[in-house]
Amino acid sequence: MRVLGIDPGSRITGYGIVEQQGNRLVHVDNGAIFTDSAADFPGRLKRIFDGLCSVIAQYRPDGVAVENIFFATNAQSALKLGQARGAAIVAAVHAGLPVAEYTALQVKQAVVGQGRAEKSQVQKMLKALLGLPEIAQADASDALAVAVCHINSSALKQMTGSAKPASRKPTSWRDMKL
Image (cartoon, rainbow, N blue to C red; front, side):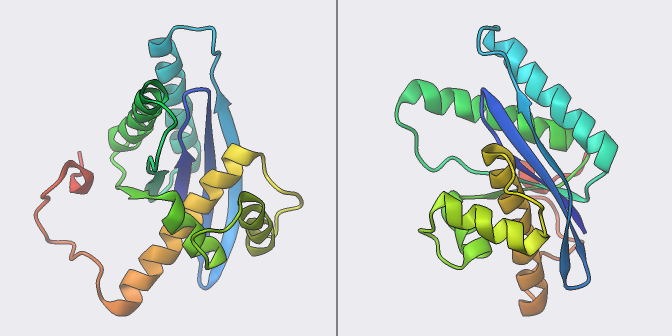
């Protein structure tokens, strides 16, 4: 299973691709899409959408995992972050990929084993888990963590038998395949 993890942001959107090969997690690629903060906001959203569409076309993931909004310091930044998340989700849905969403707490729990872990702990654990030569850029590192969380969550669901049956009718836009 190959997963594209996304850490959305209106200025920097991180992405990370992780593949599960048996019991191993393999780092495929990571990076960030930088938008020009001087540009108009709709143009920045288009840059995020186009950048993620390119990543999806190049790496052909089986699914996409996006970090969910936990809190924001003000309403304006929360709205911008929500719109950046929307651009990321639309890029995935546009490619016909399933989308999963995880909170920062869930991601930290899945990667480090502790939901209140520091960012530096998550980055060091990712470096060890994925055999990275160095710690990835902050947003790309967050995206790799989201991808690892999704793989670990999917594996746990399969082991416990709580995975959604494939024949189930979609009840949410998140379950739909276009």
